[in-house]
Image (cartoon, rainbow, N blue to C red):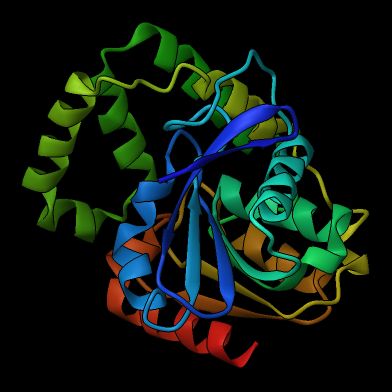
Length: 263
C-alpha cells in the first residue's frame, strides 16, 4: 500500500487486480478502502487504484479549504507518479465531482467515467446541508455524527433492515484512531464545486447512477449532469438513496462493470 507525492502532498493508494486501469475516487470523509464491496467485482477485470483523497485515510491532511479542482490535480499527479497515462474513472459523491474536474482539467487522462450520486453544482439547500455537516462535525460525538450521515445517505427501507449494522458502524466511528480532521475542508470542496459552464466540453462516455429516493444529492442533480454531458447515460435505481451503490450492490456492480468493460 504505497504513497506518492502528488500536487505537493503525500497521496496514499492501494492496488488491486490486473488489466487496464480504473481509478476509484471516494466521497466525503471516506478513504479508498470504502470501495471494498465494489472492487471485489472490478478487480476481476481491471487494475484498480483505490486512492485516499487529501484529508482522508493515510494521505496528507493539509489545512483547507479544499476544492474539487485541487483534488482532481491530486488524482492526475497520482496517475503520473505511477505511470498511468489514461484510465477509466469512477467517483462516488464528492469523488464524482472530482472526476468531473479531472475530465475538464486533464481530458487526456480520462477514458470514461462512472459518476455516482453526484452533482454539477450545489443549490442553496445542498450548500446548507454541507455547512450544517461542518457545524455538527465540530459539535457532535463521532457516533452521533455517523448516525446523522446514515440518515442522509440511506433510504428508509434499507435503514430499517440494517439498523443493527449501522449502529455498530456508529460505535466503530467513535473508536476510529484516524478521525477525518480535514472533513470540513472537504465539505468546502463540495460546496464550491461548479462545473456547469464546462461539462459540455467533456465528450468521454459517462454513466451517471442515482438512487430514486436520494435526499442528499437528489435525482434532479443527476438529470442536470446527464443533460450537460453529451455522451452520457443515466441509471436510476428505485427505492434506494444516496448510498444506492451499497443498497443495490449486486445490480450496481453488475451494471457499472458492464459499462467499464464496454467503454
